Structures are given as structure tokens and as C-alpha cells.
Amino acid sequence: MAEIGRIAEVAGYLWTKGWAERNGGNISVNLTALMSGDEKALPALSPAIPLQEAMTALAGNFFYVTGTGKRMRYVAQDPFANGSIIRIAGDGLSYEIIAEQPVSPTSELPSHLMMHHYLRMSGRDNRVVLHTHPTDLIGMTHCKPFMQSETITRLLWSMIPECRIIVPKGIGIVPYEIPGTIELARATIKQLDRHDVVFWEKHGILAVGSDIIECFDAIDTLSKSAQIYFSARMAGYEPEGMTDKQLDDLVEAFGL
Ligand code: 13P
Ligand code: ZN
Image 1 (cartoon, rainbow, N blue to C red):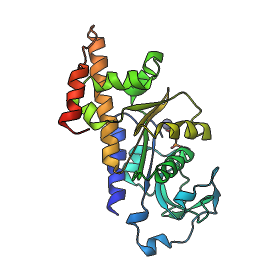
Image 2 (cartoon, rainbow, N blue to C red; image 1 turned 90 degrees about the vertical axis):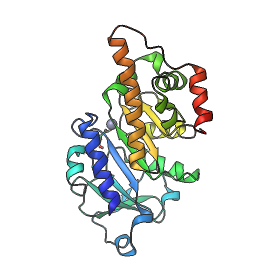
Image 3 (cartoon, rainbow, N blue to C red; image 1 turned 60 degrees about the vertical axis):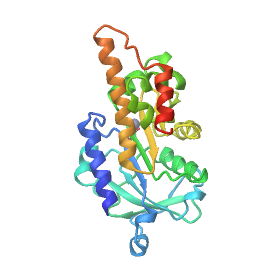
Image 4 (cartoon, rainbow, N blue to C red; image 1 turned 45 degrees about the vertical axis):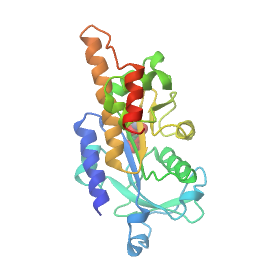
């Protein structure tokens, strides 16, 4: 399936970018519309694994999910030895692994599925959730003044016009929570009504979208902005940043 090739491609980018130390980061993609009847009917390779909350809007859906503890550099080489396809049960209360090997999904599955569920309920066509650990962006989340959605969005937008264009909904902020917890999942979905990219304080970044390459590009563009900001600061000056008018002109010019 071509989509699996795109997932492997992005997993490789995450590693080469230096955003995926050890098993850092995870990916889930809704494959339901891309799978044949025969693929959907594959027998389960695992028992039914209960979900903490009913994912009724995802009942009968299929996801490729990276495996817990698996390294992105190996997902890039062999996505099915380092991830699996899961089928959500008809009542939305459990899932089973159906292909190709019984690789246990990421510990962030609660966040990923709650996000897919929330987006589906909101009528948004976001098939992809991408979580990764970019050094520069995580570094910014260690600085309290940046941990305001408006402040960090304005700062990163103002470093380069593309950022305003490619991340038009700005950045949501989730205060620190233990990785993999339902609390982190709940705090994250609260940000999704207004944002497609969310920063997890002192942990990582998460993007949702309809296309995995676009999700990667959004995070990559934010990372570029952060690098421009830090380069200027390391050279000893505060970067001027684009003015409000320069940013607003992009809204009109690009129909944002
Ligand atoms: P997993 O290996 O379980 O996907 O965890 C990696 C991670 O980044 C947790 O936030
Ligand atoms: Zn993480």
C-alpha cells in the first residue's frame, strides 16, 4: 500500500532530523478508506485489547500505528516489523491487531485514538496523528513565557512568512503530563478545536492532518522558525520578527 511507503518515508525524516532519539515519537494513520475487503477481513493476531474510553465514531476503522518501544529509523526500513494495523471493534470499546505481525501499538495510543475520535466527531478529515521530539521546539517549551499559545504562535510565525502560511491555526499548548496517559490525551483534544499543532510541555510536538507529509512539513516549518530565533539569540541579538502588518498581509495574499 502506497500509504505505508509514505509513513516509512516520514519516519526516516524524523530520524535524520534528529527528532527521534531511541523510540521517541509515534505515528497513526487511518487506513480504512485505502484497504480492500480482503485486507479488512484479515483474522486477528491478538486478543481484543480494551480501550479506556469508547471510540464509537471509530468503530470498524483501521489504523496503521507505530509500535511501542520501536525506533523510527527502523520503522523507515521495515514498517511492519515496527508497527501494525489495528481494527477497532464494532462497539468502539476494544481493538485487535490484524497485520502483519503482533506488534503492540505505541504507548500514546490513548492520545492518538482520542484525537482521531474527536476529529471524526467534529467532521474533520484528519487521518493522521504525528508525534515527534524536535530538539529546538521542545527547548522552547522549557521557557515559561513561551508557554502561552498566542506568544509562541506570534513569535514563530514572525520568523519567516511560510510559518504563517503553513501553520495558519497556530500552536496549542498542553502543560506537562506523564507520557502515554489519558490525562495527556484529554488535555490534547481540548486544543484541537482551534489548532492542528500542539506542543506538549517538556516532551514533544503533535500534528494532525489529512496527509502525513503535510503534518511533517508543519512541524519542520515551526522547527525552522525556532532555529532562526535561536540562531539570532546565539549571535547576540533579538531578532526583529515580522510586523503585525506583514503577518496580516499574508492572510489576504494567501486567503488564510
Ligand atoms: P512509544 O515508543 O510507546 O511510541 O513512546 C514514544 C514516545 O515518544 C512517547 O511519548
Ligand atoms: Zn513522546
